[in-house]
Image (cartoon, rainbow over all chains, first blue to last red; front, top):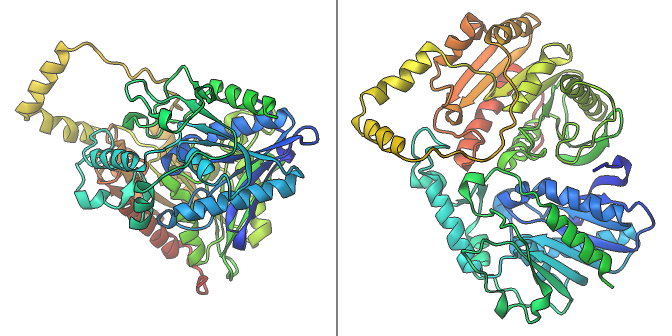
Length: 260
Length: 274
């Protein structure tokens, strides 16, 4: 996909200019605006390319897009150990306002993968989001924390990665490459996402051997779209392999195009 | 310390983050961190962010950026080989950091393919004063094979495992592998000698994550001969660490080494930022 560099502007914004953002101006005067909420941890790095491709696809449709990093992640200020759920929600609201100011469009939709989807859902009111597309959002915080703990624990004995097994202390207080605080861990364990009032589309690509329980969350089954290929979010062998999906980009672009 | 985002380069196609210390001594080298594989400029597990911020606090201006077509950077639109492109991109990066921080000499840092990029540029660019090669070029040696095979030959459990695996169907990873053929050993050895003759300082830090072809600190000498014993060369083998420094303790140990090497070889004459 061709990029028009001058229409992709990197900058810092928000309180104390602590947040990194990259604004994708639309090819024509923007009719809509989409905020891309990144996932956290290694998922964020794995999805970076896909988010860029999605932003370019949307911009080519005449839609203004903002990608950004929460405090303590990516190029934004703060250390990984400073990640905080409430701060992620506040940063999302700040980013939505930044997108409104740069695009001149008040009506902002949001997209997020995994925890990025959870953040978009949880910040819908605070960020005044007009619609949300959530891709495999994390809704059960306790199960998610247990999964990350199990993967982190297994990492210690990964003979493909380490010449010698590591001690339990070496892998403590981290999740797959990122330092985490007790507070953040507790916030995720207690994660509870209410269904937002804004219209939403849920894209499901979780493996079929772990059927998600969207039923309790999604009232309208028509708003859940099953993706054909499962996304290997939790495969430790692919921990450092990029997540790419053209069907995902097509599904999101089509949904935003058709959104009122 | 202040971080600023830039779009820059001859085709304004590159994206990077400059870290500018609040006070800067004259003659301080600028530090440029190159992409590790296809990971965007923040580095594996945010390694490059932690590295540049630590160095900023020590008083070094830094730039972490994406090479053409990687991360947020676009193609330049020129018809160039990848080597020409990398050299031109790093030239653009040095120009930007020179403008922002008034530095004229630079240290390049790269992990894995980033190390190869740093090597390419360090071979020819007179503005490069030093380079940190993380898991850079390495070659299996006789010593490597002895260290690898001898313990295995004497391990009965391993023999049983090998025999049981033979009975199973072969298992392919199914993942496509995109790799760059390494330079011949003699060429790298000569390159290192040329760099040192030109006064460059070199820091080679290799991890246990490349144990498929490097498994002991002695292998630096086995691979590159007497050139690694010259005063301008620092070597360190971090056996416990993996290739991308997934554990925070390993990352800190790596950064301690890089920080110490920089302060020994390119000291900041006045104190860093508070």
